[in-house]
Structure formats: structure tokens, C-alpha cells
Length: 77
Image (cartoon, rainbow, N blue to C red; front, side, top):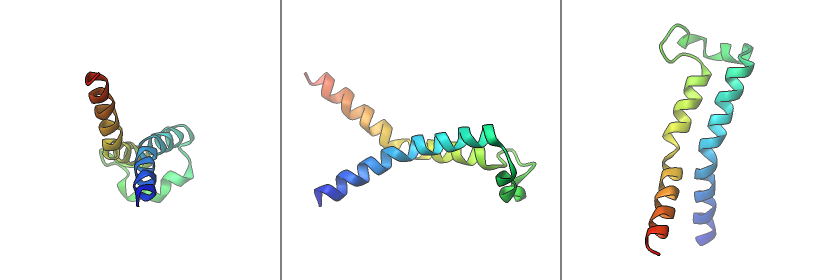
């Protein structure tokens, strides 16, 4: 049970940088793969790059929790 919780925590931490890297790669490579989301073209947040940025932001809670825990641990000393 502890191992599963530990793995889940690390997977949660991996999500934010993974989506940020995907957003950066999509911005740099901006090729035909972006055409899969053609329905959103012309919209304010159309395309894959903004979607990956939003996913990165939504998954940042694990990082914010880690930072808060570390600050609390340092403040308790």
C-alpha cells in the first residue's frame, strides 16, 4: 500500500514537466500532428500547445504541495 502511494506521488510529479515538454515540442515542431485538432482552429485556445500548457497547469498541484511541504519542514527547524 505504501509503495502504491509512493508511486502515485511520483507519477503526479511527472505529469507537469511532461506536459510542459510536450507543449514546447509542439510549439517548435508545429507540424501536421496539430491538424488533428483542426476543429479548434481560430478559437482563442485552439491547437495542441495551449491544451498541453493547460494540462501542465492543472497538474501542478503536486508540485505546489511538495514546495509547501518542504517550506514547512524548513520552517519547523
